Image 1 (tube, rainbow, N blue to C red):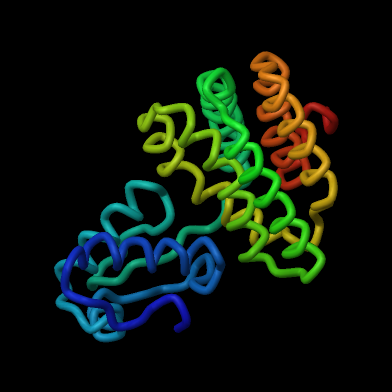
Image 2: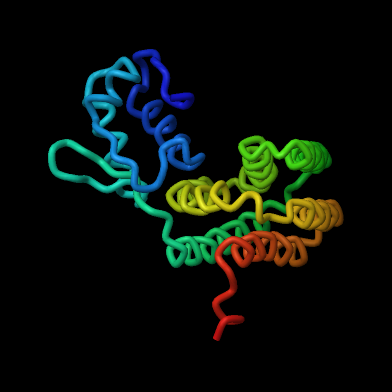
Length: 220
């Protein structure tokens, strides 16, 4: 399995957790697939302890569920959960933008432009992982400049549900719309227009949610 490799001894729990989370998000471990801690431990080249600890964290995030006999199952993708997650993600990123824009520097603007160009290249190449990583790096700039680590910690728990859905429906996305939205965000940040930047960042996430999950209001 590409995401699961033998790893060094330090920080085993965190490394196993990150590797498994990536495998689940990218659908390398598919919804409904059953896995066993002893098999994972053998693939990672570690004892069962860090694997079990990692699986417990993933269960807390709703990405796996425990089964009898030391088995674990990758959870299905639930659209209603993803819809709720998008609402929270949008609000948290809006808060990050409000805190970040007054302190943003030209070097941060250049980084945002660089990540948006990286996103376009990945989309042109139909590189799903590259596109998602570039999008994460774009938004990470505002999260970092915001100076509030609690926002990132809160996002870490729910972003997996959003990204897993994104991987499953990547072919239906209009990536160029996101690039245009990012350009508008960059422009607002450059002008230090925090109010506009907040609205644009929030809409960037909400519009992605509407595409992936569907706007339930339109179906009523």
